[in-house]
Amino acid sequence: MGGAAQLRVEGSPIQGLEVVSLPVHRDERGWFKENWQREKMVAAGLPDFRPVQNNVSFNGPRGTTRGLHAEPWDKYISVLSGEIFGVWVDLRPGHGFGSLFTAKMGEGEAVFVPRGVANAFQTLASNTVYSYLVTEHWTEAARLEYSYVNLADPDLDIPWPISLDEAIVSQADKEHPPLAQAKPVQPKKIAVLGGNGQLGRAFAQLAKSDERIALYTRAQTDLQSPGFAASLDLANCSHVVNAAAMTSVDRAQTPAGSAEAWQVNAVAVRQLAARCGELGVPLVHVSTDYVFDGAQREVDELHPIAPLGVYGQSKAAGEQAVLAHTGNYVVRTSWVIGQGNNFVSTMRRLADQGIAPRVVDDQVGRLTFASELARGIMHLLDTGSAPGIYHLQGGGEPASWYQVAREVFALCGHDPDAVQPVSTREYALDRPHLAPRPVNSTLDTAKLQATGFAPKPLSDLLDQFLGQNRVTS
Picture 1 (cartoon, rainbow, N blue to C red):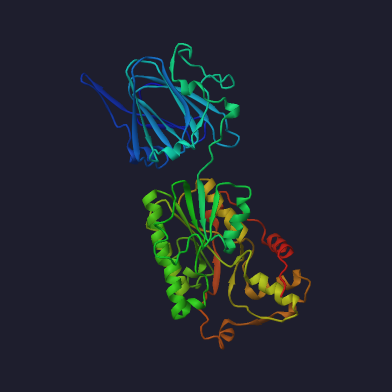
Picture 2: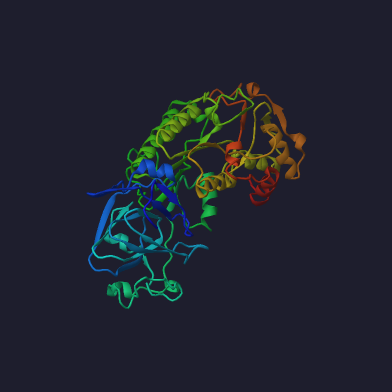
């Protein structure tokens, strides 16, 4: 690796480890370089790295060798004087575990080292000065999360320019374990608020096979508590998913319900977004079709919001608070079906009890199963999709609540003609606190699908849900 004429970021065989070529301006006085310049480097392809600590290592003799250490944070390393032979080994769980990358570095190079990748170097010149910026403050507690690999591991067969027998190596580094015994560095957590809700329970299912997901119930994180955001410990979190909300649409029209809706869906969300912003943790906020007035048959992410009732208004305010901070996501959805009280479970219970319900036939949209909603959110995070607003809704043709009810009755082995159609106006005659609802709740999901997300067939999901969630009186 030689000096670079312009700033350039290139990948490596280790996922997320980026090699940076730095412009170095030289004259008879010496040289100058911008060792770290966030705006330019992010534009060139580095992650939006936000260091909080800068460490510098002076290495007197040639052949000084340090590592291999994997810390629970991201690092940006560079040489301020001299030259090194750098070594990196991936210690993150998965198919890349044990991957090796090496490179010589001078003043014109830097490397971004993602969390969980072990780092080592050997000085190739005397009086080498080595710098590294990190994204977490060092603490004694953090040392417990370190992982190590032996510099002389024969399985790695690192081509050290200077034999380790002749190099200067600390006794501690000599005693590190071989790769076969190295502790994998677990990824940061994805904190999911609202763990007892329909979406939270869907995330709980994913958590059985994904150790990153950490659920927080209302007992642990209550959005009605004034200081809840300040008490959140997000030091080891890569993202926060806000699946908590006040969703009682009709009660939100009452004085007490309105106060709760504004506190949970707007005020608390603003506090949460501010807290995440302070710590540089992206927030994924789940929103709703109720931010629209339903005048259009189908709406995309750019359609103007125009909520009809208090619930939609409070959710719209929450959206704006989240989007005020860069790097956040708003995921709008509708007609959520999961474990807990929902329309499909109610229709199933009424069908089994022989009750013929009256169901509105002039509100049209699509069901969204909580399992799909959780899967879609994880897809956005795992693919590194750009932050912003996304619509996530079940597939298939839009249908009215009446049509959905008929299908549930039929799938449960009951006569779908038992379901009676009724207009929203008629349904509301004896319900004074019934909230206004969008007539159309169909969301355009093309933006999400362009990221590679393929929704599962709605008919299969409905049939599976009814088979797994028999509701009794």
